[in-house]
Length: 163
Image (cartoon, rainbow, N blue to C red):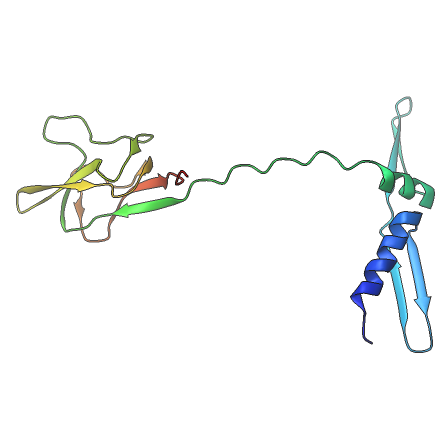
């Protein structure tokens, strides 16, 4: 059986315009039946607190179809893409210079030149820049932890590009 989608669309439009719940067409070689699910109406009687469920009539379905569409709900802004910033070398992870404040905290905005941490290798401190613009959402390594190449250090939510 070969369906012609244009005919189906036309039948659906016909059903909408006339408030029909079901349409059936047939000839010697084809049979097409389109049926909408019944629309349920709920009636609540407050005195007895009984709930009655009655199938809607085709007229009620037609009235429902003629009601204006609800206001579209705006889509929420997509969450910024988060990336894990990983160690670029082997060494000891340091969140701060000796006796200093941590380079970054959760929530801090960073740019590609912002120093995130120091990885100390063979007693040489190596400043590690962010290389991206965004916001620190999580600190994944402990101060003083030995890290290897690829060890996750920070999670950064990437700022959307402007313009």
